[in-house]
Length: 91
Image (tube, rainbow, N blue to C red; front, side, top):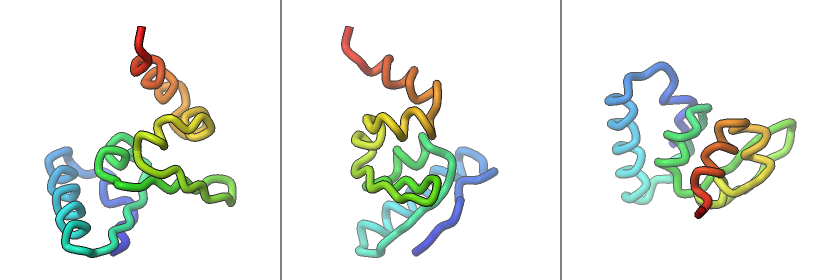
């Protein structure tokens, strides 16, 4: 199933329902591809992250790997991504 920006302009409760449906479909063997710009939601629901930018596709892997990818952090998540990265570092 391909869901193009399903989280766009939906209430958080609706987003949670969508995430549950997508997870259930995947658990039942359906390939589920979700696109969007709601990064935190997508990182929370996805098993694998693929980032497309400037004509290039990057297979980032699991959400933890995507969160650690320097270019993805800098170019897509921007300052917010760098703040999350700094907050997750041990003191």
